[in-house]
Image (cartoon, rainbow, N blue to C red):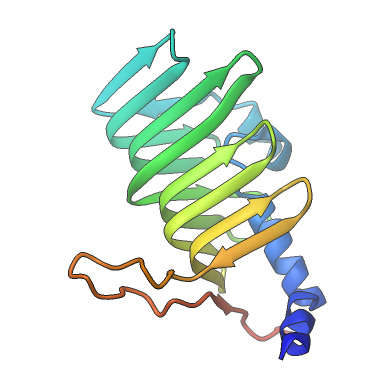
Amino acid sequence: MMKPFLSLLLNPYLISFVTPLITSLILLSPAHALEKDKESLIEIQSDSAEFNEAKGTALYQGDVELRQGTLLIQSEALTIYNSEKGVSKVLAEGTPAHYQQLVDTDKPPVKAKANRIIYFPQNERIALEGSARLQQGENIFEGEHIHYDLQKHILNAKGRLKNETGKEGHSTTSGRVKMVIPPTRQ
């Protein structure tokens, strides 16, 4: 039972799709964006903003939109956490929060959505939580929780856990992880 699963995970096409897709989700990271993105201004618009220097946080609320070149993050709330080493965490929350960025001019933009998109730049981890979905062109990866360690190249995706329920107390997803890979076009 485990061998077919391992062969699927080690499939070169799957690896060549998932690794660049997840890697491209590094929010605000100039190393993985188009060259013009990292040279672009960061513009954040929201209904309100609160800066707490003592806590090292910036909180934007209400129809938040962050743009930097081709990077676009839309959420109901966006919090940026700073430490002595710089930005320690970026949290975008919404129903859902959206991320989009063109990482290669020869490919469609990478799109992600989840109730919470969390990026930890200091240890290069990203988490999509709550109805998570990654897409680039026709390639789609879905799960309730998608976590990726960018340094170790470890992807962890989970479907809805048995004790997680929707508003009415009923499961709102199949509880499984889903990947859609279109046929190779020649």
